[in-house]
Image (cartoon, rainbow, N blue to C red):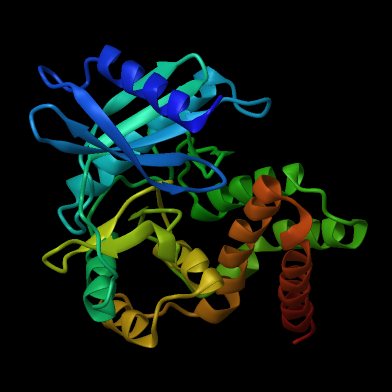
Length: 307
């Protein structure tokens, strides 16, 4: 289908959805495209602007899965907004069409995130918001297009074990890497020795450089979440993995939440989760980095067991 026909079809579906009350979408302007979704700015006849994300169903994700993915994103955005920390686009709702589904949110005019210190302080403030006494979330969600199991668990280590195993089970790891993944899972509690209490923090879950910015006033903005209530350190995994965040950010963050014992040993495990997920979403281009990181983790395990 030509791009113009696809946009016209999406406009009709948006207006049929009744998400805009007495307003009507008149124009959709593409503002980005990724390997997962197409995104647009919607202009209405009443002069309002909204953000629209569209996912086309395929063999890996049917229409209902597209809807479920965006409904989970609405829940995540709402949870982040309730912390009163970051600016988070307000979701309007989810709709579907014959070739997939769409999400509509408030349109926020974004600019480059320049105040890294403010971002670090805001992230720490979000992680310090008091929540439930268990780990998980009230519904399962997605990280990219990969399902995330969020059933409540009293133990963070058990919850993390479940998350990692799910990713490992989907990934085409070579035999050596499979054995190393099993070694990691079997010894996961050793990475948490010396931590007496992990308090559940609300985790954005997919906080790479492309999922944050600043608004016109310079306030940090986050979006595209994959939330759960989890260990605050796990948030830093993808941030460290793909870079783009400066030392000033981490310094500001740790002024409010100091590093716990063995932080540097656990950090590669949190990075690994996202590398395996990238294999599962995008293929073996990430396999080399993944196997290298598994080797580093297992070398550390062997050293700890020998000491």
